[in-house]
Every structure is written in structure tokens, then in C-alpha cells.
Amino acid sequence: MSAEIMKYDLFINGKDVKPSDGKYLKRENPATEETTFSIAQAGKTDVDKAVSAARAAFQKWSSVQPTERASMLLRISGKLKENTDRIARINTLETGKPIRESKLVEIGGSVKTLEYYAGAVSRLNGESIPVSDNQLSVTLKEPVGVTAQIIPWNFPLLLSFWKIAPALLAGCTIVLKPAEITSSAILEVARLCSEAGLPDGVFNVVTGEGSVTGQALVEHPGIDKIAFTGSTDVGKIIMKTASQNIKRVSLELGGKAPCIVFNDADIDEAVEACLRGGFFNQGENCTAVTKLLLQKNIYESFLERYIEKIEKIRISDPMDENTELGALISKEHYDNVNRYIEKGVSEGGNVLTGGKRPENMKKGYFLKPTVVDNVSVDDTIACEEIFGPVVAVMPFTVEDEAVRIANNTRYGLAGGIWTKDINRAMRMAKAIKAGYLWINTYGGIIPQTPYGGLKESGIGKELGNEGLENYLETKTVNIYTGGKIPKWYKG
Image 1 (cartoon, rainbow, N blue to C red):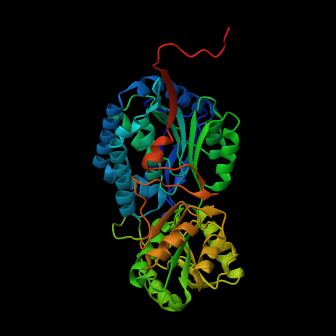
Image 2: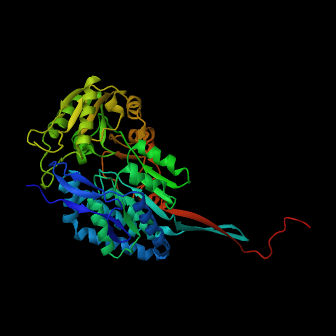
Image 3: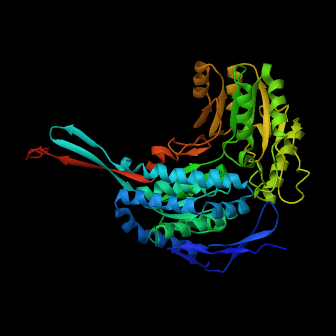
């Protein structure tokens, strides 16, 4: 018997609002293939309403004392904690990820982000710059305005709060568009924000397709800043569109993260971290280790231990607390990941483990963790983002070779280095063209640290102080403190 379908409207100006054209998207649970959600599809009229609500709320919210805005973040954090089990369940039903990840990473990470930015309120101060005896310059930090936040489907809650928390602290108002297939949990969160006391219109959610809802939001003249996380190709379109009105833009885009393991590394620790790096969240992760580089004289021994561990990963019902790897997000994406595996084999790759559906999972978009070797540096699976549980393994001999293989991609988001030689570690960290690196560990993006990519992995940073600066404008005020202004014209 099918479960009851959960229906969600838009969230505009503090209220659930039906879409103007009455359209809803049926969304299935990727682990069971059963229709579970019915999600409103916003059109241009609905986007207009949401932007108008955010603009009307901006003047009041931006004038609220920063300490009060920080307190609001803590109240929202408290609501998330109180509702962890319920929101995590909805998140797992729509994403297919293990319930443990929904609780600890999505909601736990969102709470940490809110708490971090609540404590960052003191960083809203400008500077005092004594230019000369007769002139003082001061800088003021002011909120950028109404922000459009466009979120991908892989971490629909966590990546939302990476944007929501600094924007609210800065005094901005928000129109957020989640991915069309993962909209339910953030709509539940929007209601919690209102329960926490967030004023109507400060945080609005419009759901729908990127080509319709997202496009209307990006083009809207009432939007001052766009924050987008998603594919590089869509990021390029957003950047081009935003240039027509010189909107502020920050983009966190695709990745092809290398992890480089030298022969002096602690192999057991490196194996453990590369498991998490490669297969966490089913590999649906921009920082996933999908290009594993092993020094030749440890290649065989590392792979033996690595594969032994991989084949013990528990793939089961995502709602089971013991499940370690869940379902891919959709049939379309499942088919696309399988095409990458087939492409890897057709280009000469050899599947060492995985590459097929688990025998115990008859329904749902489940795929065994997959390792492919005999991969050349220019092969498709060595260069393109797969966004699934597929790792390409390649040997290297010397540092320069590892750097060449690691950097042979249009992306530059993240990477890892394993060595006990600190000098080598720092040489490699400088040589790898990526914006976020780990040494002798892998995974876990910390709210205190700025995160973002180089090359086609994006522009701007999220998290840390840089993440707050995304939502602030700097205004310089020059004050003349002398007696009379010096004369330029002599007449």
C-alpha cells in the first residue's frame, strides 16, 4: 500500500501560498520509487510576489540591531534541534541518503553554521582609517539587499543554511529556490523560521524548475545578489544573465577532487579517509574523492585494503540507522552515473569492484561503490564530475607527475594530500589548483573556514568571514576635520 503523498505549497511572506497556475510536481522516494511528495511549481507571477515580499521586508529587517539578528539565528537553530527527527525523515525520503547523514550532517551541520554566524556578529564592524591630521575615513558595512539563493539537491538543508545564516545576520532578505526534486524539507524549515519569530517576508521559498522558476529569479530586477550552488554549466548562464544588471554573484560549482597518497603516508588512515571521501552521500558531493592517486610502490597494497573495506559498506534502507550508503537521487541520475562507468570501461578502464546494483536491493536507485583502475589521465572518468559512488584510481611515481594528473581538469574545488613530510605537503598544497585542501585527513567543511573553488569551480567563498562578506557592501565615508577646505581655484 502506497504511503500518503505529502503536498507542499510555496512559502511567501510568512504563509503557504498556492502556485498561481496550479501546477505541482510529483516527486518519488528514490529508495522505493513510490510517489511521496507533491511540490508547487512557481511561475514568474509567484517569483514576483516573493521578491516583492522580500523587498518590502528589507527596510525593517536591515534596521534591526545586529545582535537581535544574531539572536534570531540561535532561535532558528533551537527549532531545528527540536525538530531534528521529523525534518531528517523528510530529507531522507526525498534524497535517498541514510537517515544518520540527514541528522548528523544536514541538520547537525546547519545548526553549527547558524551558531557560528550568530557568534560572528562582531565582524559586521567597519574600519576607522586616519588618512591625515585633517581627514578621517570610516567604512560602513551595509547589507547588499534582496538575495536570490539557488540550492542543489545533494545537501538541500546544509547548503541552504550556508547561505541563509550569513545573509540573515548581514540584514539581507531572501528568496530561496531549492532544487525541484528536493524542496520539501526546506519548506518545513521555512515554517520553523516563522515559528522562531523571523518576520514575514524575510525568508521566502519558491519551488520549481530551474529553467522557469530559477530563470525568473535570476532575471528579476528586484534581486540585488545571487548565490548559486550547482553545475558549472548552469553557473555560466547565471553569471551571463546577472551581468546585464551587474548583480552581485557568488558561485560554488562542480569539482573533480584528487586525493594524492604518498608511500610514507599512514595507509590505514588514508584508506579510511578515502572511503568517506569517495562514497559519503553516495558520492553525490562536489568534494568527493573521485580521482585517487597512489604512489606506485604502495598501489597494490593500498587497493587491496581499500577494496576489502568498500565491500563491507552497508547498503540498505536509508531509514535504517545502520545504513551507510543509500540511493542515488533519481532514475535519471542513476542512469547517468552508469553511463560514466560504461564510458570508463570503453576507454580501457577495469572495474575492480562494484559497478552494479546491490543484490539485496530490488527497488530504488542503488549502486554499489565502484572502483575503476587502468585509467589514463585524459579519460572521461578522470576529468569529468560523475557525482556518484565511482572512484578512478591512477598510479604515479614522483610529485610532478601527481600534480600534473591532479590539475588535469577544468575544476579546482577540493583535494587531499597524504604524507608525513610536512615540506612535501606544503609544496603539494601550493601546486594543486584547488580552493579547499585537506592534509592527512579528508572531508568535513568547517563553518569557520572559507570554502570555494578556483578555475571553473566558481567565484567567491562561502562560510568563514568571507561568506559573511558575500552579503555586505562596503561604503567609505570621508570626514574633513580641519578648519577651512584648501582652495584649488585661485580666483
